[in-house]
Image (cartoon, rainbow, N blue to C red; front, top):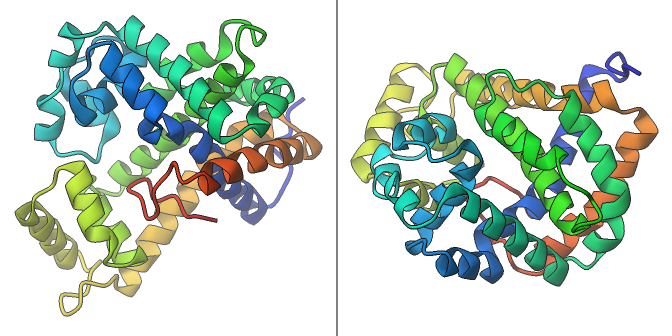
Length: 300
């Protein structure tokens, strides 16, 4: 049954934002949990960045650095090229996928005990959303979708839950990249805008974790000033900059909300948030994810 007509635009955006806040923590254990880091080392991936790029890109296959630069959007190309395609000489994408899924499930079981209880009901609901989502123009989601829809939940329901949250996370991310690029915002500029909106404390985190130099950051700032999006005096967003950021976030929410409203009714959407929110809270309270973080995920 198509439920897309349900809900005002504001309600749909609010739901999409809430869904992201409770989906992202479950997915993000793969970046921060010791189980994931050890699994990557065990299969031969060398260092934090090789593990990150290989693990997140593995659903795409043994792709080149250029594919990852385009799909991930916000990393300096040199950071990607230092690890890809070299990573595939250390571990095949198939080996990376197995290690990633098993380690993430182990981490979720450890830090979020409610995941095991919720997975049986959650996974079928999330899979309906994933099946309803459009993969066109969304390379990371399209690559993760078959992983999320295949296999038996009984094999490892927590692993299935992690994979479902991962697919939905990449669906939202792909949509966000599409909106940014449609507005002519490149990877470094996106970070400058975010830091200007959220506070200067994020500048160092975003620059260093994404490989941008101080010169890169300065050049991006100058481009945004020239467009009238940043105030040259204090580096803060101008009214035009605030309007653009509001538009990007709202459009991202619009795109992310669509499959939830196409696949599920209101009670089912509320059931997802009711089941997944405790999992997200347990992950957050465990200290596994740092705050502030380069994902932009708030503590609450």
